[in-house]
Length: 182
Image 1: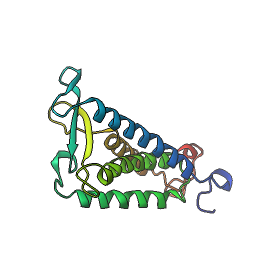
Image 2: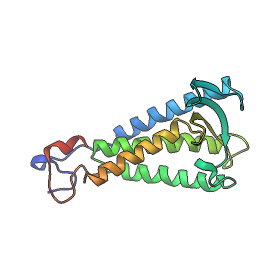
Image 3: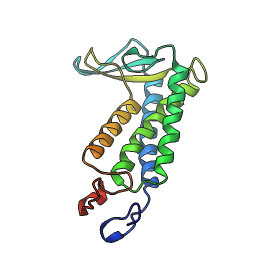
Image 4: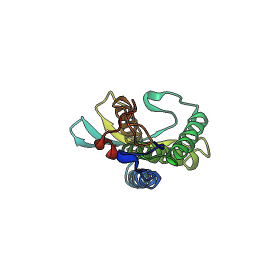
């Protein structure tokens, strides 16, 4: 049976448009929220949403979560570029809707943070990412892009654990009618 063939040997359509649509929506939400937060908030002046559990607070992050890789913004920029290139390459042959959604979430988030690193102060390849969502005092401040990357990665792990392949088939050589939507 050809790669990407589903029930009865029917070839599933490629899912790159779905991946790109999800990525575009995530990127638009990320960019829109960052523009709004930068325009309306000042660093050090948090806005409480739910007591001290959820608040908005403007932070410009030169590193990654938990203050990792601070001072290595150029490396994080290169990693983001590699993720974008890798996801687009995988996406060209993708036939699974679930994988398209998961990779679209990762791609949209990676592009959102990459744009910050490329175009925000202090300069190209050194830009600080705008973070603004704070949940409790112990969790790092994050943004829509970060949430999207994490949700996409979790979805991809779930799909992998349950045997859903990027080509739309199930691992183990079995083909199940329900996996066409995965």
